[in-house]
Amino acid sequence: MKNFIYIITDRNRNNLHVGMCTDLLKTLEFYSQMPTLFFDSSKHLTRLVYFEEINNEEMAMDRFKYVSTFTRAQKEKMIRSANADWMDLTKGLKLEQELYSRPVMRNTAPQARKSFAF
Image 1 (spheres, rainbow, N blue to C red):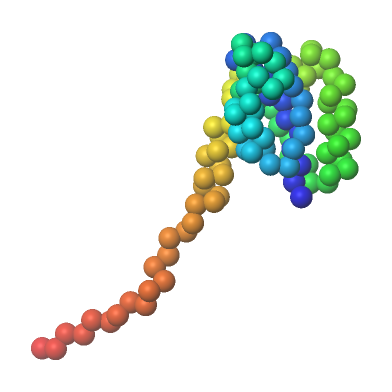
Image 2 (image 1 turned 45 degrees about the vertical axis):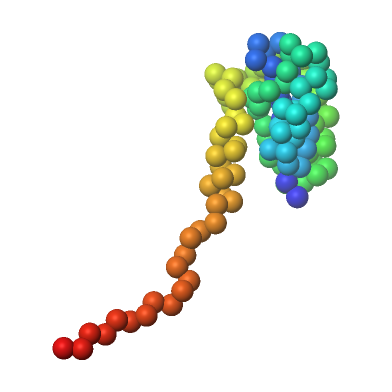
């Protein structure tokens, strides 16, 4: 099962929250539905600025514990190495999900041969 380590922040980049989950899009949806869960309403955690995908649950937990001990400067350096402009990565994830989950339209009905009598 895939596991994700992520860093989410508010619009002013004041707070950096490290988390771990198995479904990144559902977790981001939870943050948008519960904006005051961790902080007051002025500090909504809405921007996904960094994430890692790890296939092994034990390795993911170890990485989460390790990244959680980072100072703010270390977290910022890690974010800038992958996302120099601190862009919100949520939009790209949603687009990728749509591309992979979109059903392929195939014409499965047999084509009738048209014959013309002259």
